[in-house]
Amino acid sequence: MPNRPSFTTRALVADDTEAEAMARRAGAHGIYVTNAFANGECDGFVCSHDGRDSVLCWFGARGNVVLIGPDELEPAAIAAVIDQILQRRRSWRIVMGPRPLVEALRARTAAKPLVLRDQVYYRGSAATAAQELVRGDVRAAERADRDRLVQATLLLNASDLHIPPSQVDRRWLRDTIDERIADGTTRVLGPVGSVHCKLDLGSRGPGGTVIEGVFTFPEQRGRGLAAALVASQLAAEPGASCLHVGVHNAPARAAYARAGMAEVGRCHLLLLG
Image 1 (cartoon, rainbow, N blue to C red):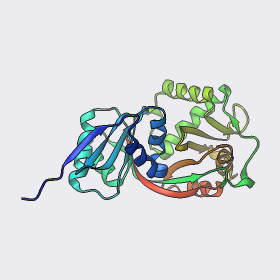
Image 2: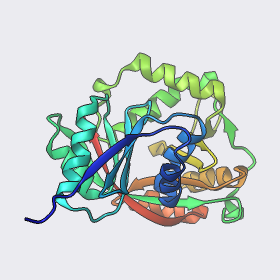
Image 3: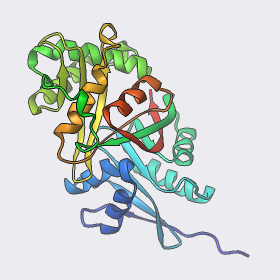
Image 4: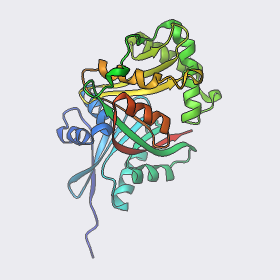
């Protein structure tokens, strides 16, 4: 009889140089994990197949899971990884990774998916930023902007992630926005209290900076604000910046390209309800 494949797992630890190298090789898709290693946030595991590391799974503090591995895996390897995720009983809602792994996890999850789609990664830096779009009036959000930022997040969630405003915990949302205002990780264009366009800075560290939550209010669209805000942020960052966006979102993708970002990869996204 043929030998059955052997699967083993090991927990992530801060000095796991092989796992960290896997994250770095993954490029934009590995930024979250690379930065997490630098911060000592190593909740996850590596699954090895016949003695060779094949898939890295990282659990983020915000309920996000990042899966790093090849696009092609044997069914037995996929099943072994999914078994390990489910056995750990972590609380998560968002999964990003190769399509076969994400689809297999969705198939074994009872919760209804709100989003299941391909995402495109974009990357840029100060060297690639469209200098003609860089503006001097980009500012950090202030406390007086909070109500407007709450509205922006609710509209973005509804339009892009299919999350009705009624399903969003408003206290949690306000607290999250207050934290971003306090630490300066929300950048905006527009008057205080009447923001026109905004973005958030997510994971930051040696892997780069992740731009999140880019949103322009409907009445302000058509003025190139998103491209200008992103270009300005690229120009202000000392290292590389990345973001990911739905493959179907042509207007946003065009704005990121105008800002000076280039497509560098893809992944599959699952968001549970």
